[in-house]
Image 1 (cartoon, rainbow, N blue to C red):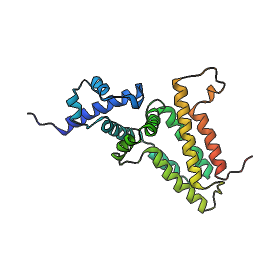
Image 2 (image 1 turned 60 degrees about the vertical axis):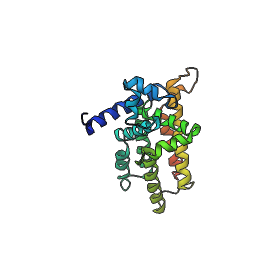
Image 3 (image 1 turned 180 degrees about the vertical axis):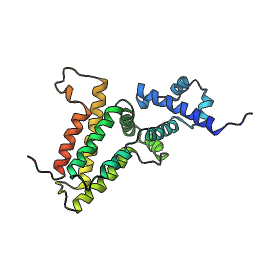
Image 4 (image 1 turned 120 degrees about the vertical axis):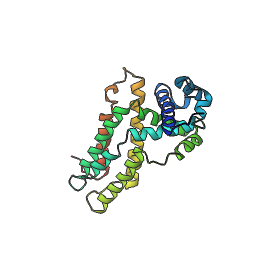
Amino acid sequence: MPKVTEEYIIQKKKMITDAAYELCLQKTVSTVTMQDIIDRTGLSQGGIYRFYKDIDDIFADMIRQMRERVSIKGKIDEILAQKDLLPPTEITNRLFGMLAEFMSSELMGIEKIDFELSVLAMNAPQRIDKIMKSIPEVGNMEYLTMRTMEFLEEQRLSGKIHPRVSVEELLAYISSAYGGIQMTCIVHNCYRHERNPLTSLYQPQILLGTLAKTANYLMGEESD
């Protein structure tokens, strides 16, 4: 029997995770099945199980590859590296501007899958626990939350900001609001309601721009 090379294994696993990713874009994550992946790849059932235990094992590897392919950690670091040169509110504006660009470019890609994974977490928490436990890397949003908490606490202690709420409450609010904006933009992109007078405002740049203004106000920025 010919020896199976590491390159062969990597190629086959990428074929499987690429198929899973494409299916997750076409369907909801929770409805993608192992049979779907078998049909998409043309591999046999045994061919799939040779590399993965089950579909959640495939999802875990797919998410790991997504994080490697589209990471905003470097951009976060670049913006926060200017914290001694720019006002805190400008740092906030740049972070939200970067997030708006990311959400716009990945709205029906990584953002859609991320949102549907959060829905899956509500309906089948044991599956998400299993998927995420096998991913040691910190995701984009987790990294942003950690770095932003460090930044805000540092700015508060130095007297550069005077938050109207605690740093923890502010970050919890931003995280919740971001999730709502993500859901609204994804749903609107899939199902446009032309009669809704707010239709034109359901855009990442607009909604995250408003969230940035709210965050700056909660950070202690005085209103005009």
